[in-house]
Length: 415
Image (cartoon, rainbow, N blue to C red; front, side, top):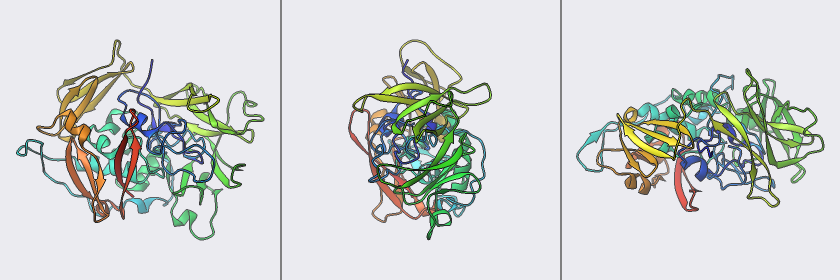
């Protein structure tokens, strides 16, 4: 059975940064791979397309990065998240400050007359999910995160619902942007005293991983392709000799957990396993990466949903909730919680503003304003402008991902 809602833990946060393609992870409605915080460790998808695309490591020879979240194989930073807390230090707090609650607008629906009030708390948390993530391309766009309130619907993401700063996001996802306090001046890639894996100068955006929270310990190695040092989270796998003689950051494997330890996803380099836990809300599944020649082993972390269904995929509306049977899992998107109505098109559920239709949502795209600080997101199909500086960010950055049909899809984020 195909599971379409990946957990963020599937993303790779390191050198390869190659999780599932964002389009696959971000737009599918079932329970597939983990991976923001996304974060799936997929095979080379385009930046936003597979999951943790974030910052790709130019010239590293690793996989092309994908959403949400990583290191050459770190199964960690995905959208799923462990949901625990960790001491992340101050790094990343500059991403979003407490200053300003953000604009709370009363919007008009597609009919031009019916007003609705956007949920500011959800807007803020989704902006932080995209903006505080080292990987630029999110698993899900801010528009989808907001309109469907996906963080409340998808296991493992709810810990970010109350986030008001990047420090809150980091404590939830256990990853973050390494600012000057960690990578400024002459500071280099390393493991710090708290056990964080800090990568300076290896990616478009410097990053850190809280290895203890991600189920491992920090380790460093020199990547043979470019001679650079990388920091990632070492994992203990069974059998202990499995990675002996292996140095391949394109092949990923699952480590089955126990009653007290979650599954993990990892790759082998220099005879050592590197990766991250899928988190307590996800399960790792061994697959194959058919995009590479020859085909190589792959692994993906999928969200565990509390309710299952049988039969073909379907969608229905019930009391303002879009209820999906997707890949055998029941997924509930509470449209009413963000002031929207439910609508259905085919086997997919939508949350729409008054008078809007699913096609309106499909045709609405994110963008940045000419001033460089305005983010134009789509709230249930209605354009909704926010000032990135009101959330502690300095600019709005546009990007492009690829959907499951191979089409380019524009997106934007406060950075």
